Length: 161
Image 1 (tube, rainbow, N blue to C red):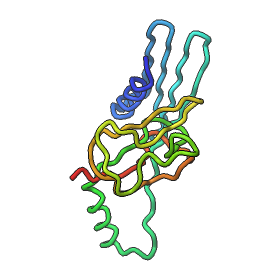
Image 2: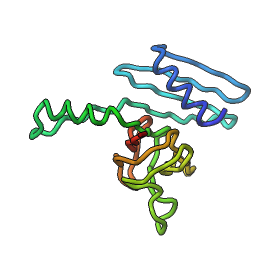
Image 3: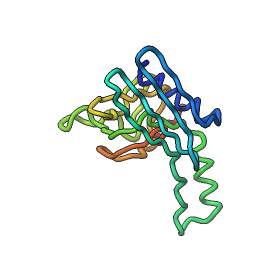
């Protein structure tokens, strides 16, 4: 079972409202428990019986700055609604460059195609490329280089037009 299948399973369990799901496939055992306040805990056991707990928490809603009026806040949300959000597929450390001496993968104003790499997320010493699923123009970069990211955290805003 690969990482993408595990991520999809976590998403499915989170949406289903189930309290606990256990899956055993050969020598791999996965247990996903949903607890109070929407937290989910995933335990994966492999042949050496190593448990890897993963905490998945919904992202807290950011409070609007005090100087913005409610109409400005509503207008900015409407403006953002036309954009597609690229979200983090895993928990880890986000890197915007392939290596420290190279330029960033994408920056605001760049036009990208579906399948283009937009960043790398390091998780447990594995570097996972995050690819765009849509074509469009990068409107906003929502995270800094070398910062930790959570599962399903927004990373980039894309204008598909």
